[in-house]
Image 1 (cartoon, rainbow, N blue to C red):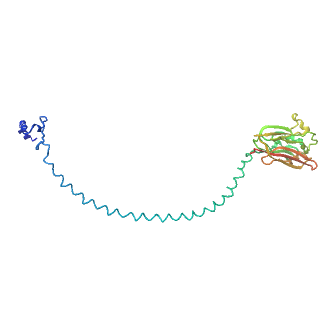
Image 2: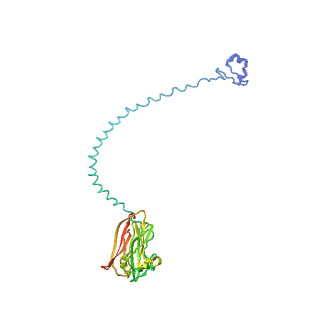
Image 3: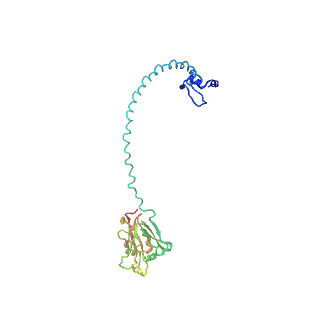
Length: 324
């Protein structure tokens, strides 16, 4: 409120000019507002100028031309000619001639001969199952012009044909080096023989060997029983335990039983027929006994042919039926 007006007006005069309802009273030192025009009124002279002459011009003459004459021409006369007259002629006259007259002649007479007649045997027996042995230098003995009883000079271990445990004799032979004799032998089928063995005398008793020439060996044979194979033979010396030898030139031999309930198959005799009927022990070097590969001896015999002046030595060779 204007200060000059405040001085001129008194409370009573104000009351006379305005009614009680037109006054808002606050504390003593307050400004009085009224609803009437004038100082202290809530109003203003006028609500200012018109907002604008018009709400601006019309937006535009028209909202632009029609979108276009038409939504352009038809997409195309048609969705292009048909994809093609047809999806080409049939794929071809036929899917080419038949793949061939037939899937070529038969693949081959058979898918090649069978891989082999049988899947081949792994090998008859494991490598190194055979071993060659011979009497060493220290076992060479003087036997020139000797009689058959001189075989007792080869009694010691390593001097006469003898296989290690589990093997059997496959070959044996006697050799001369000047005046000395010695043995060679071959043992095979390692692990195929058991520890069940038997040792026997070979002599066919009847008479003494007289002059002891080679043909007197015809009184000896080393015959193993069924399912046994020969592992050793030798002439014992004339010690008390073997006192029979001197008078009968006895020879001992050992046979051992096959393992795994095996039997012997493919048996055959191998023989040497040579001069030497009335010769000394050195003539034994003509009668090498060799079994075919893998086979072992089960019988050896000495036979004489007096009329021909010859000796025959033959051995029966067999193959264990589970030989590898």
